[in-house]
Structure formats: structure tokens, C-alpha cells
Length: 225
Image (cartoon, rainbow, N blue to C red):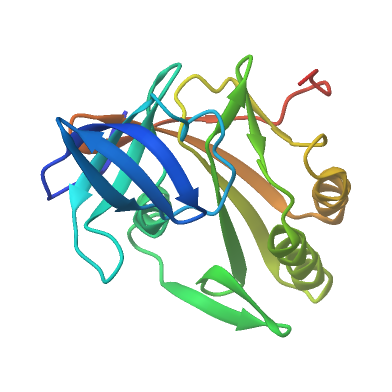
């Protein structure tokens, strides 16, 4: 277990009242309704629903006064703030390498370029069923575009990696969510055939620290989900 980051702000607990849109959630704290920003565009139906517990920090904006950090899952707290992804991914890279974030390639952008020749795209994964981490939890045109970009990078002589950041410590293996986005599943396995590498890293929020726990492999067989 490796500590990857600490949350500086005070984590406060509340109860989800309603997700008013993709980015805003009303949260009950005591007798007060807080209006929190949600930095995740996924469906999160198993996490952000009325009555579930969430952790948030105070942070004001024109429309909200707090930001949700995590929601209660079946195996503990599940991070739902995608702004933490970059730091968590950086935690997995060796310290002595040169990492350049947000790099343009082939009319697209990927999260990292690691000199001399490795492109890395990260995807946050919060959905888990029967120990299987699943991505995406909603159809993702952006995700499919990134896979095609990584395939093209490999075909052009570069190395490429798809890095899944699994925010649920109950994950035993990873599989592309063929129910939600069957085309993503097809492109995922095409990428593997072309030489794109895949890593699936499991993280856990304990107290105010986020820890890297382990890597899990792609499930040997197609799971029933």
C-alpha cells in the first residue's frame, strides 16, 4: 500500500438529496442543504443517489458552495472527483522520468507523454459489479476517440498505454463495460491486439489519504454484468 495524496481540506459528511444535473448535487448536512459540484460526468447511479453518504469539502463558486470528493460504496469510500486523477496517475510513474501532461497528438489530446516515446491516457473507474471493475458507466465518444488515438500512436512507432484508475478497493479484475458501450469493448480489445498496454490500478480513500493498493488484470473471461 502506497500513499499517493492527502486531501488538505476538511472532509465533511452529508447525505445526497438530489442530483439536479450532471455537475450539481444537493447534499443534506445536519439541517442545511449544501449545493455541491460533482467533478464527474458519469452516471454514478450506484453512488450518487438519494440517501447515500458523500464526503465533500467547502469550495465556493458562482453556483455551488462545496465539492464532492467521494461517495459511499459497498467496499468503502469511492472517489468521484476526477480532478484528483492526474496526481494519482503521477503516483504510479517512476520519479526519475520526464512526464509531460496534456499532450496533443493526431488532432487529439492524451493525458501524458513520457519521454522518449510513451503516450498514456487515464480513465477513472468507479463502477464495480461482483468484483469486476467496469468502464465506462455511460457511453463515451471521448473514450473511444482516445483508444483510436493510442492505436494510431502505436502504428506510428510510439508506445501507448491505457491506464484505468479504479476507485473501488473491491475490484478483482477489469473488463470494458460491453452493456453500456459495446463499441468501446471492441475498440479496447483491438487496442490490445495492436500493442496498446493496459494497466488497472486500484486505489482506496482512508481518512484524508488516498492509497494505491494493487494492480488487477483484465478478466480472463467475459463476465456476466
